[in-house]
Length: 337
Image 1 (cartoon, rainbow, N blue to C red):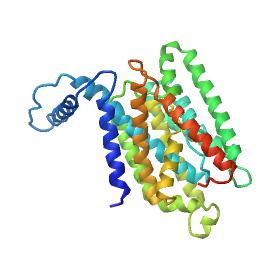
Image 2 (cartoon, one colour; image 1 turned 180 degrees about the vertical axis):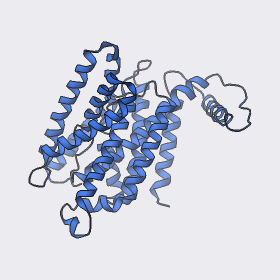
Image 3 (cartoon, rainbow, N blue to C red; image 1 turned 135 degrees about the horizontal axis):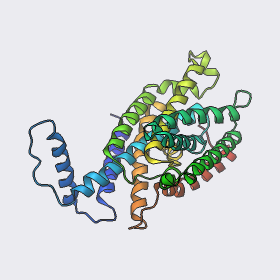
Image 4 (cartoon, rainbow, N blue to C red; image 1 turned 45 degrees about the horizontal axis):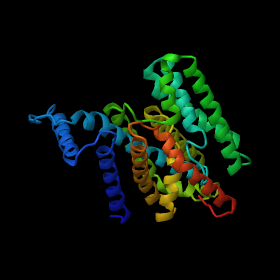
């Protein structure tokens, strides 16, 4: 077993427990454990003959409100961090991230358009617009087979502004959906359901497993055209990874709105600890990304309680200085993918 795995799993479990334990309503340790135990028994009672017992006092708060929110935050964090790792390898750019290069904004625009047509179309519409966003930014930024940092960032930022403006236009001109606008542009886990958790569990599990499975290709793709000589079908895997990044980003935005910088910060911190080999970097980044976003969500719920701050504001406060730090390192030539 890798030495880093027990530490990251322990951090993950600790962050999830604290996320459920702490909040605007004070709970005791027994309130949390008894509610979770009752919820598990209640769920199992639908399949086997088991008596869940008496419902604990804070069962609704723990099982129906906090636990799905915290678990969803963890799964979205895993998903965004994995998308960030793949983006940095694919674009061969240490500053690439679905939020910074506009993919998240495109997915939010797709969700808004899908909502106008039919709420059932929100997820597929987010996916389609995620793919379109990747294609547009990649096409604009690509110069003679290379992806210059400044061009990629400018293209992503410009496209992000355009997509955000169009999203706001939709919500402003349709007041009945305007309350959702803040969620898409600032990110939130309020109102999370077990259905959202189920959707993200499948997406995150498949996404992280696939990217971990193809760790060799992620390593080779960093070599660019030279990887072709080593037997890599570069054009095929570019399309495959672009599709994976778009899918992970689309479902993250669909369930929680636009949350930035998780896909930028997590890979860099894990790369400093474990090195650049994606065999370990990809799963470790996913676990750390989950922990990071649960922590951000906890801060969003407790910093100004009883007011709940959109989690996207917290991640921006954490990530923006880190991004500027990375930008300065890149300027000095000290930053590599």
